[in-house]
Image 1 (cartoon, protein in one colour):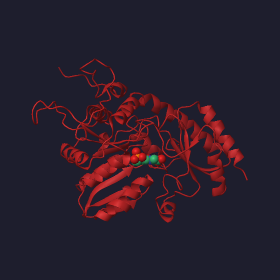
Image 2 (cartoon, rainbow, N blue to C red):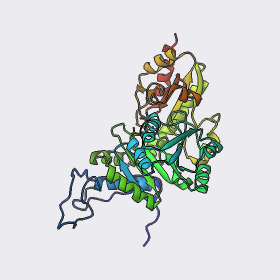
Image 3 (spheres, rainbow, N blue to C red):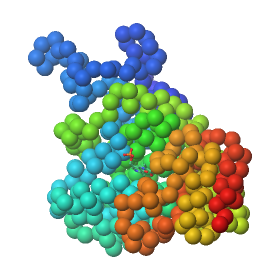
Image 4 (cartoon, rainbow, N blue to C red):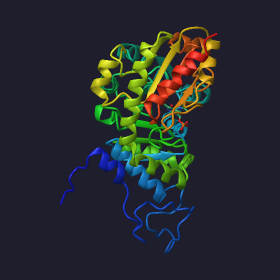
Amino acid sequence: MKEPKRRFATEAVHAGQEPDPATGAIMTPVYLTSTYVQQGPGQHKGFDYARTVHPTRLALERNLAALEGGRFGLCFSSGMAATSTLIQALESGDHVVAGNDLYGGTYRVFTKVFQRFGLGFSFVDSTDVKSVERALTPKTRLIWIETPSNPMLRITDIRRTAELAHSKGIKLAIDNTFASPALQTPLALGADFVVHSTTKYLGGHSDVVGGCIVTNDEEWHQKLKFLQNAVGAVPGPLDCFLVLRGTKTLPLRMSKHCQNAMAVAEHLLKHPEIAKVHYPGLTQHPGHALARTQMCGFGGMISFELKGDLERAKRMISGTKVFSLAESLGGVESLIGHPASMTHGSIPREERIKYGLVDGLIRLSVGIEDVQDLVEDLDQAIAQSRA
Ligand code: P1T
């Protein structure tokens, strides 16, 4: 009999996980093993070496594939390892069109590492599908988009970009780290690959670094699985367990992140000392209407500009008491950061300023604390930052 299709919150708790056949343990064991005993040469239970295949990792890969509505998941030792593995599936001479608002590390690995191996990259405003189209060349094999983007929270139309890509025989990868599959499932909108830093919302507790790729394309899955094993950037068993534990509460956490971020964004918007607020949940945001059509919540990330100079912005981000000054995002605790000197320091200043990532931009990862404490903390930090 065909199993009935289970809904997202049920899949989050159960997908990919069975009680341990040896003991009935309800939690997937952290199999601390590098190898498996074989009955005879090449005779084994489907597990031969832990870089190639690992039971705790397999459970996580199946769980993440289910959450993204994809057939195949692969896990990596970091978000950057997942990104790099997908790029390694291309050939020297191939060309990639990428959005111009990207995590600084992604920009860095594209321009400082893969460009050296003969791959070409063009960075365009992906919110304008025509700009993406203009940048395509006969060598373009992949379009790479973050939506919402880091740190400007820009929204790119996944459906239209997928149509454009497929009309030219090009693949579309969406870095879904900021939304998480609780809010947006790019494969259902036509994307070919979903990439994540599982370090963020999927893990959810700032205690692990990891990454994944999910796809429905079996041929590409085999190519990526080959690279996962051949290149070897795999996560350890405890890391997989932590992400697997994180995804169980993903829907609950995301709903609170969205609720708190909306309240913080509305508060900042009304604040007389704030010049600009970027949050896709605000009706003033240029991507708001589009976000409503492809997301079912606007996420926990906000960026904003304070009135005054860079020194004031620095004083403000050093003055919060509930928000911690730190890189990363997506954990239960609120973080505040300065993209120009922290997460996006590897993008040349003239490049980032061209597309709006100004020196004074401040980024918030709004956690699940009591929102009143978050608002009061921002207010006191803004007040004490006055010259
Ligand atoms: O840090 P790592 O797990 O390797 O993931 C890289 C990465 C990929 N994609 C996006 C959208 C990201 O935001 C990141 C990592 N970002 C941060 C560390 C940050 O503070 O923005």
